[in-house]
Structure formats: structure tokens, C-alpha cells
Length: 190
Image 1 (cartoon, helix red, strand yellow):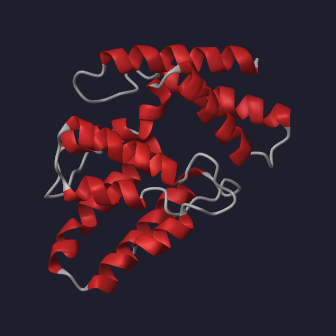
Image 2 (cartoon, one colour):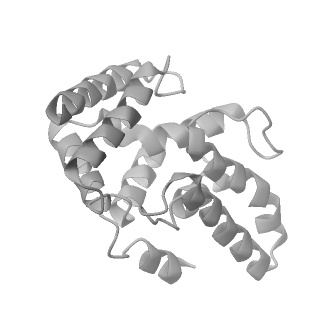
């Protein structure tokens, strides 16, 4: 598993969605003091398929397929119990919202932790955020500058239109930093 995932996260089209992103999430997860096999596995598998040309929910759905094939290949009862929770967590990254139906072995607070970890980069220092935005641009370098700018601004404005970007408790400071970073990126793009 690890070698295959390492290979996937090292593919040449990746600039942000790399092992560094996984490491960043794992570090944040360790810092929050939570403990969930489903979250740890979802961190590893949530972006294991990443094709910026196809984009959209295709990547998440394909990542779920890879995860579910992996579960099948193990034959492990423990992994079978985690199949649905991990798939639900990965699927939640499509909308970055808590799903209405949450399977056994998972609760809304765990979904919030996972989604906040995935969005954590938005609340980093302006230098780290700037590097992140450059890496995202590299991943979408197949788009001409004007097309990229319009699409990126639209995505960023969708973040700002949300009542909350971060869903867990105690994330108010992160919320404000993320909104500042996003507004500054929009100003650079327009």
C-alpha cells in the first residue's frame, strides 16, 4: 500500500496534492489529539487519484474506487468495517460539507476534523499560502492564464460565500486567516 500511494502522490502532474500535503494533514491530525483509523486512512487515500485535467468529483470518486479495491484485496474484517466510513470521508471532500447520512464507526465531529485538515492550508501564513496558490496554478497549467484566473476566482469566492470554511469547534482563528489569504489571492488574480 505505502509504495503504491507514495508513487501516486509523486506523479509529475502534482505540485500541491503531493506527499507534502499528506504530511501536512497528518501533522495537523496528530496535533488535534484525535484518534481514528478512518481519518488516517482517508488522509492517505483521499487524493490518491489526481488528474487536474479531469478535475471535479472524478478524482474523489476514483480515489474511493482505489480505496475500496484495496479493502477488498486485504480480506481484513477490520478494513471491511472501515470501508464505508473512509469512503464517506473521501466523498465529503467533493462539497466539503458534513454529509446527511454518516455510516457506523464515524460521526459528524470526525468528518469535520478530516475536512478541516484538508482545508488547513488555507489558514497558513501568507508565505505558505502563496506557495500553495503557486502549486495549484502549476497543477492547472494546462489552462491559459485568463481561463485559470476566472475559474480560480470563482472557486475562491465560493469559499468566501460559505458561512464557515472550517467546520470544527475552535477554528475561529483559522477561519479569519483563511478568509484573509483568500481575499488577498483574489486581489492578485483580478
